[in-house]
Image (cartoon, rainbow, N blue to C red; front, side):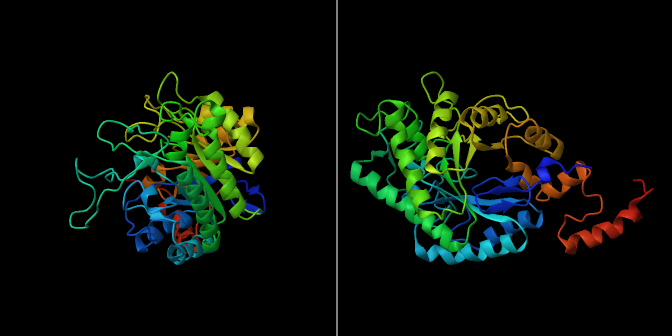
Length: 377
């Protein structure tokens, strides 16, 4: 039987993922001062035990004010490297590629955690305080959000250095893959969209001007990230702002420029420019963002990662077989089932004997298999 594409290795530069299943970056709000702790090790480690080919951390801010909340991870200080190293060692030990995402929240920073009560900034008694947010223009993300201070040229130059420094730290921690978060209404997406970027200098105006800072950030990361390691960027194929916003054609043009800079994979999401949402505000069906991935992959001729309501192995395999993506990112479904990957292998008929499982689990499960034959509830 031919091996499913989902379980075929994928080589990017000199790094090879053992399969095409990826844990999508998902914020957890459990960090203090941006540091990796035991929670992150257990949270992400279970996905490596579940045999995902690539395991991403949540987004790591390139500076403290670049966090979305004060519970986010960071990559802004050398003192944060050691915690990341510990996490990376475990992920690799279990056979997964270790990946991290770096970000700046821009005008969507200094916000409550998603599950906090209205007006609450974080856990009671933690002493969390708001900070001044920044953006391309003095436009709030929505009612109730702070009005950002507009970044000047010196600020932009400083941020470019910080993106590069974050890439250097990620490499020092041992990560195999780095991704820039350029989607969901965070800083780079704010520069891209004409809805949030009203500048009249070289970083605004037409599409080329609005792409200038995000492309410079990608260049800064690529220059500080080893040539043998792959680099991803997450984008919102459409910004969700409606007519006059950022669209698929813009994303294709952006992806072509990114490819020329040395980006290897476009992680294709959607929406999030305004408010707290992080995806397109539409009625969602299975794989609702896959058409965006397919368009970018074909029109920009670059590898893509599909994400969004991909629930099982057969669905993921169909996306890959159709040529609509090269990698499959699993988010909330991975929270629901950390063993999604090995379950998908069984659904696709390529691991009936539990050989893909970590041997400490697989031995027991295979031994139990015969005992279940004929049993009824």
